[in-house]
Image 1 (tube, rainbow, N blue to C red):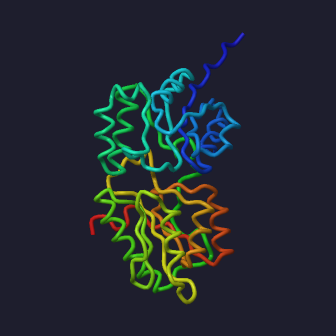
Image 2: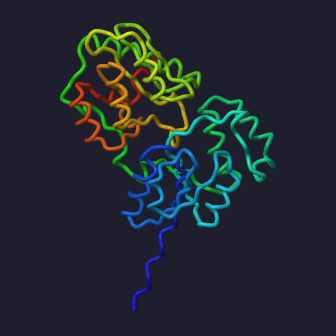
Image 3: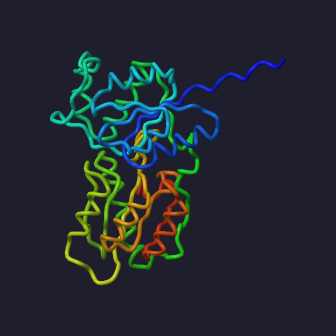
Length: 285
């Protein structure tokens, strides 16, 4: 009688908004790995309820850690957008209040500093191992080249180059991952409110003749890549179209895309290009 194969350890997933947490969970389960998801009330997609899960309020890090340890999770994936916590909206639970000095220090940092500090807190203080989402769901890795039959014009190429320089410069200061440039003018830069809000601002600007302008999303130089890589999806494409843009550009292997084929198809339907630039584009220039 053969011995039973050892059960694979449970993968913990801390879920922000959008479809990515469920995609990661499904990929893990398909490979025979059990999952446990901690959802954030008011943020996480209700679809996570298809998997073993629990809900916590925003800021309940102590409860989150307790639930993950009860589920015997060691490996964690942090995936999906969340608003940045502030001194005004962050309500830590009692466990985190014991580390309040450290928490205050994290809140004073930029986005990447906050995320890097959070990763260290989970790993060094509580013994978890943070894994990149693409390690579990390789299909999320943004590929190089064009996802669309629609391609950038010469004017678009000029806007792309300018936007890349802006995003790299701001990223080096931990100030966002995206920018919109049209006809050589900066229409918007990404802040803590995220890409969708930025595109909403562009859509409210005076209309431009035809489609023009590009959204460029790139990771910050030297950022903690296991969490908070730029993400794209159908909503990004539709919001870019609503803003009158000609296309979207990202860094190959430096972004996560939910449903690559669907994104390319929808962009073609709307007349947008979606292009993955070579890894490291614009760095050191």
